[in-house]
Amino acid sequence: MTRRHSGRRHVGHAHPGLQHGGRRRADVPVKSGHVSVLGGLARLVILSVVVGALLYGALRFTGLIGSADDYYGSGSGSVEVVVPPGATGVQIGEVLEDDGVVKTAEAFYRESLGDERSAMIQPGKYRLRMHMSSEAAIDALLDPTNRIETRIVVPEGSRVSEIVAAIVKGSDINEDDLKDALNNPEEIGLPDEADGNPEGYLFPATYTVEDGMSAKDLLRQMVARTVDVEEELNLDRRAAAIDMSAEQVLTVASILEYEARRDEDYPKVARVLYNRLDEDIPLQLDSTVSYVSKRKGDVWTTQLERADPSGYNTYQHIGLPPGPIGSPGRKTIEAALNPADGNWLYFFADKQGVTHFNRSFDNHVAQCRKAYGTSKDGACGG
Image (cartoon, rainbow, N blue to C red):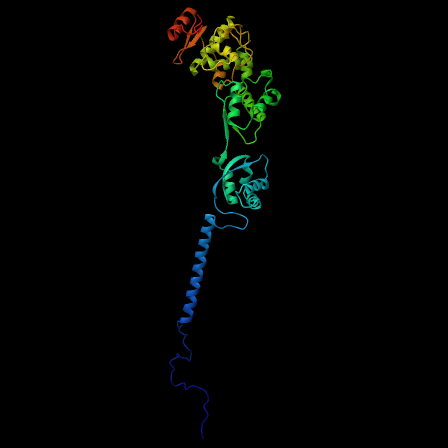
């Protein structure tokens, strides 16, 4: 009789794949060529993504590609842009888009909303690049080196006519507008002491002329600077301490700008003027006479010029002229408030710019003629 196989293995012989107790050993992993290929492909994909990201970043950095509505990078070329006063972020964006700086005003506006620095963008004219990212445009507008500014320099002693000429030459402000503003003293803030005369009240300094600035606005700045200096120096109080008005101090200071050449001589010349005023002697200043004759190039005057009946002719009239003959600076104002001690009544500056002082008229004439000879008509008072 044939016996049927029960399906059991004989337990008396250990199978190579079994351990004692009948438990199978853990399967040992076997490398597969198929799995290795898949791993290589995965690494290749990852590498491609990394390289692609780096390439994309490089292209965006160079500005070759960007978002749909914005450029990327710092742009190229050059263009002048004017940001008008009071412009909003949207309006600035529109200006930049129209001038080819940014791709869209909307992108610039969105960028400005996220950058609190954009609130510090000032009106004015700027030199920017074409095709800039909105971020780069904001950076450029905040960089003072990109700002195109017109600067007007008013030297110490400058007269109104000279200041007007400098403004017309150095800016877009025209002469007629300047004269109209000067003829309306209340519009430019002239103090009451000026009695409507701007001479001496356009303070000598360097002024920035913003794009679109009016003649009235610029002149108002100059007058305001004078008023500020007067307050800083306590001019009213200190002038009263030497029995002078603020206007008279400015007048003396304006004369010092023309009659002395060195800082150390300003207080001495001021003392000569005060001594002559105290003794009711005419000041006899060529600087005030040339203010009327509009003489240029030197400080001398002719006998004909000194015969002019103008109130500014200090050869013909005792006392100070009616007002300043130019715009005095801080140094001469201080000298007028703090005259040196001395009894001098005469002075002159030699060719080297050194000022000589004398009480004696004869000594004054002798020294002056030694320095200049007798060729100048009345130059030494003789």
